[in-house]
Length: 332
Length: 262
Image 1 (spheres, rainbow over the protein chains, first blue to last red):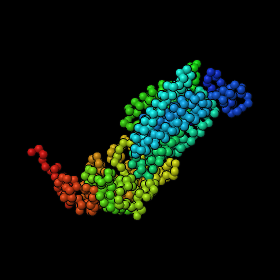
Image 2: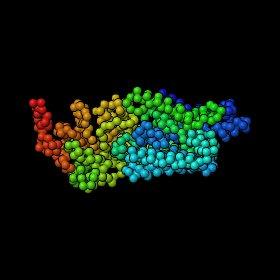
Image 3: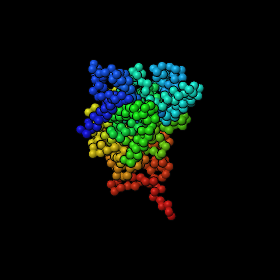
Image 4: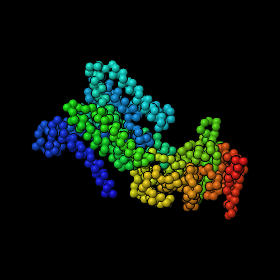
């Protein structure tokens, strides 16, 4: 039991420690005392440090935490519900929709908040489209996945049209750069909707933890245990889509996190969603803050976040995959 | 508790009914075997009896209440399905699998309570799996998995347990373990409906048996409805009756007594 508590302590301390560290580093290194002082609102902190910590770095750290936690929770929930550990939260088209919405906003020259709203709205619309499409064919899990692929491809094609007509001197690079992902432009104005949506979505998924265990069984079995499977599936998709669309709208297309983090969490705490979801939240938030800190500090110019998650995610996933194949027949 | 089906018709495709007016009842304290050839409609009947499929005609009642009109939570508190074993994708422990039986008792958006955990532990003891509780369910043997699923049905608090071929793919000793447990649970007052491919299991453990043939079900004492002629009609091969020294009867397909090499 104490070993278990220790594990949870580390899991909770992980994102908090990385988050605090991330506030220290940047082009200008700040001493821990000044950062703490700025966070606590003490008067003896230099104005520059206060602005850097509260105005620039803190919103960015919180945004990274939301994106990482949201994508990881959505990934864990989708993997359970689809009974497939290879599912990513963007499987139903949320991220293709959000990309199209953002590209449209960039083309039209909208403000950052309007761009985020349009990306979020089209992310939701894409998944809604996939859901409606699947309903015409019996809405089984397989049909739903295929409908998601169809809708995502349609949105990708539309995105291609936007890129084709975009001005190659300014709009096209803006779209391309946005699609690679990053949190460089995040300020408090874009953070609030992201914080709110992430809190709502993750709270619902954590509350549904036990239902997710039952949903991850055979469909008839779940029904026989008294679970209205269709209704719960819709609710979990809605929550996961909110999280994914909000994350992509704020940070661009971030791959791998939603696939990788639930795997790592499963290896640490097992498949029970009561433990898996909190562990995924903590790991996802910590990992994303870490990657975003690397993205903004490793090179003089910012490294796109989507590139970093891919570079880190692929070898990490291979490692976890081989390890779980070795350990047993099943997925941990 | 009594589960009663009357005049149940069911068709997956219109004009091609799988069940043609089936009457059956399962009462507390009794173990009923449902037998029939592959494709005879055993699984379909079991799904109808579980409330997962709606009959086209006829009705199924649980203690006089319409099964399909019962909210799914209330239905699951009274009636449990013990499915054929399968490998779940994720490696839940046997304890967690059994604990999932408490689902219909949980409050909205809540997890299992200490009381639920105690009930799951009791159910694991009742089937003799307490030692293996923390092993991954996927690492259990076929027979142990079946026992764990029965424990889940007990944890559900169900008075009616419907089992889908609990003796399939098990060696004789494990079939005996599982079916003996089923018979004991029936003696303890539960109502058990069990589908099976093996008429001898019905003869040895069943209080009653139903033989499905071409969508119709004949129910009665195992020895009455599982005569060699009835079995030949249902399965399409001749059967021979054998008797043990204690007078216990068993049947065997005549093909198995004929030498095919000469």
